[in-house]
Length: 464
Image (tube, rainbow, N blue to C red; front, side, top):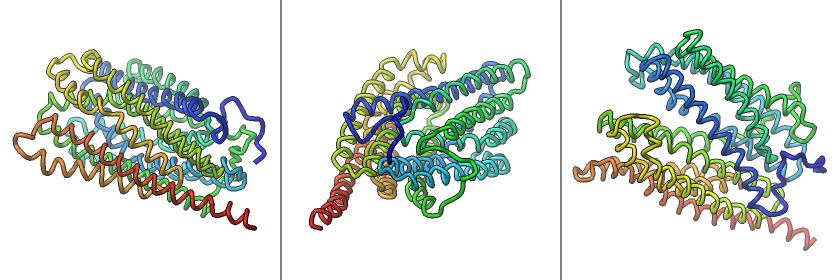
């Protein structure tokens, strides 16, 4: 592909030093994810301060459900990113054009599907989840309005995933920042001035999602490079859709099943009473900041590996994964331990109860301190997905991370002397270590196969 002169926000992933470019890609992505968490926290703070406890419970109790319903489609965006990066690296304009236009139409279809499920099924799903009666009406109202904004949410997610394929993580960060500031201002206006309670927070969220989606679409429509979006050319190309689904569906299912295994762990936590529940929730919230910072390196790995696969550059694929592992190890160890050391003051933001802080510190001391292993496990998955393997890491993750944890809870955790919170939390690092080790073996095997595939055409050419 005779690329136009490289724009300042693009990153050349197939030439030059890898480490600075990995960081150039990952840091804006980390900032975007941290900002998103802060904006979500702002929703909860505004509701908690100005609308009362029931409203706070209604908004807070929905986050797991929203994650469960959207994970599948976020996985499809990973499929779009992987495919687009591969064709970008290969210089295949025609297939890249098909990927862009199939992905953006798929984002609209995904959003509409989610809206239908969320608007019409909200109350039923919340009843299944045993949402308390005093919170049910508010939670259902919040969820229905929130899901009305699912189409712009999906359009933003798919659009940002396509921009990442050329190394552009900066512009999505700017769009998200602007939308987030608008979200906070509207939160305060709708809840304090208009007295709209949970509906106000949900409306503010939908409006801010419309802003970020509009900015991503405008950015792609105005793009003169290979990621240009022509709204009239949007259609589903069968083969392209199949390739997106082949990578995206396993990624999405993995996200869903992880959410489900966390729900099972949550139900075990609930048996220890509300003080432990509150401490666990606050600590898990702090851990999210470490997790999304490490996840930026998982995303970077997928884009870099996919582009180099497209360019047929075997050596750089290996080098990318090694450097991403070193980066994620540093990020995980530094942030995970910093969060643990500062655990008391950080947990104090969420609660004034010393007992809740104490319960939260137990979780941070085990899960957050060892979080780097989870990041390394994810980077291995990114490497495998980048070279086109998506079902294999899904199966390994499900057996290793989800299956092992459930087995741990059903066996070891049931023995009376081991029926403690530290023992429950230990299931995390143990499952990460085992899963990471198996992923490494799978990656080495997949790379050997890839080497043979890349060498065969080269051999045929030299012999010809």
